[in-house]
Length: 500
Image (cartoon, rainbow, N blue to C red):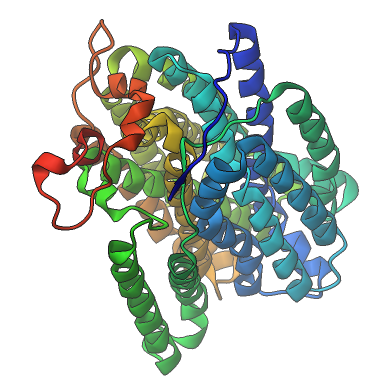
């Protein structure tokens, strides 16, 4: 480990701080949008590339999310070492080039590969944008409000992806969902150069290449088994080999991370119940979101014959709920702590899943719209308390890695959600889609119920004076100089922020 001496930078004015938030939110908008914008276009992409099956189309989505999830933590560490603004600009450039390659893809294999490269660029945007926001907002309450806005933009991008994609496909064809990224990236690059200051972590870490390889292998094997399982058979030799690969790579990852002085993922953090539940809650939220989006897309277009625009428009209530409730959630977190918004998130998500748990082909459109509104409200209430809990548990100078862990959990949830939803409906004809989708909607409800468990474990609400779990967001910078937890270290030598 090496310590990099940095010149003390003067604090930013309030106007500049919120301008930085707006610029970073634009970068994050791209990441969230491209996670879901492709979903509504999958049937059109399949037809445009020569009749690709549902299983093949799942890889178009998950090649992006798996690579994004696998590289987020390393990208956060690179940003802390080499400069967050520099890594953000690099990520934007890679994302733009890969988007153009996706738009020009002549085959499924080319498109899946280009989507994976797009995930590489996106991995440099998500944790870095959050780290820049956290670094620019020294006051814990202002930071909570800023993260609420950030979560609102991210939630809006995820929820608005289907309707945006539907409109573009209807007007310009499926390739337009990738062409549209180019002007947004150009605008983001200009704004980053003008308004975002450079920042680094107080200390830099060596790259953990073995840990990175093992994490990537574990994620790819797990998602691969979920996607290919329905085709190869869950008890086939190939499936059993996949289970063994997941178990072996996960065990090796844990073993390597516990032994390295500077691991990719400090597993000691998971000894903190609030941190662990926040990460698991982020997985559950994104499983629910992506299961509901993919099941809706396939059901409406295949079973009911809706156009991509009509199917995308059906998710507008979800975007509305997420947009309205995410800033409200950030305000609640700042004033009262995480429990109340998490209870609301769990209740609304579970209710939305139950609305669609037993649909038929004659399910009324108002019921479908209500379900999406409820899930969108739950999604909006969930992100701010989960993100703030995870970020507040680490020193501000490690904000890149802190944001990356939660972002990794989100993308793992997205990948698992797409794989599970696709697996449920693979091979189902138009008449059987509704029946095949039922377990998926029950899973959405179960994810909502799990958020109620997360709420119970999240701690007491912050008091009027700001004391409570979020008061820890003001951890002094020199907390980063405390010794890192390692297995076998006595309680007395463990930093308070690691003990939880």
